[in-house]
Image 1 (tube, helix red, strand yellow):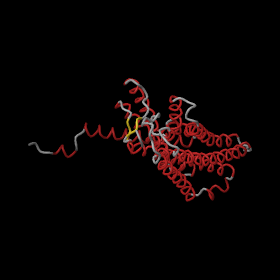
Image 2 (cartoon, one colour):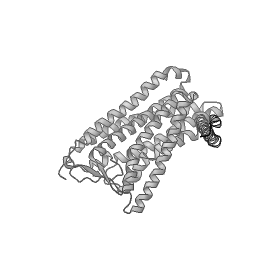
Image 3 (cartoon, one colour):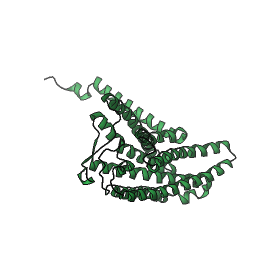
Image 4 (cartoon, helix red, strand yellow):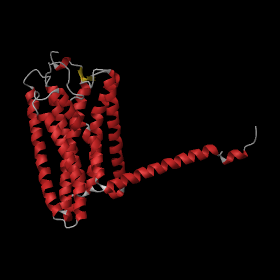
Length: 334
């Protein structure tokens, strides 16, 4: 193809050459997607419904679950549909939309994780100023800044990427439209503009990472000075899950976007793309709920309430079907 104007669709990377392998990947991705929907949906509903969880930490966690749902819904359903239909095609517009949405949600999630590190720092190192520094208005502003920064990054990268002439075919060596893989299709030095923009974004992300690391250094120093073992356990239980999420997210994302294209085969690219785009949205709810008793109690209460409502509804419908309406007993025979 001579240039990007003649490209009407891209061809994504297939998970297998045979129908059986593609069907296997469909069911695997379906299970992961449903687990992410269920887990994050439970967290969102539990936090929204339980007034005891209307605190800054859980407000940011609710935003994180929303971003996780959005990011995994951007990539996985299209991959499942292609596997089920035994095709690799995605339209040019669909590819651009996927790049924009994925980069928007991933960037916003990273900025939100930075805000969450600040939240934990203030809660543990400056507890007397927590209500002042992280009031409801401040929390809304910080969350809006994370979403807005992600949106701005996505607009810049998407506009710049799809303004680059493409003449190396239309096959994207990834199961979704990823910027580094699209840049491989460029036929001129204009792709260096996007490389420079990515380098700038990486500089910003590294600045956030340094902030997160410094915050946790102060947090762990403060935690070790807590005389109560129960207090130390509670502090670690809210900090270590966040640190685990950040470490997984950053390590795999940086590898995908900073490595030279020639140092790894497509299979390794695919593995790391799955790790940083699919695994965090699925495991975040496990990581955060596994060591957080308040959230586990809220989810358990929510599930118990839903189960009780379902039993009452079933009992009511069964009773109505077994016993006729009282007015029906007094109806005259025809």
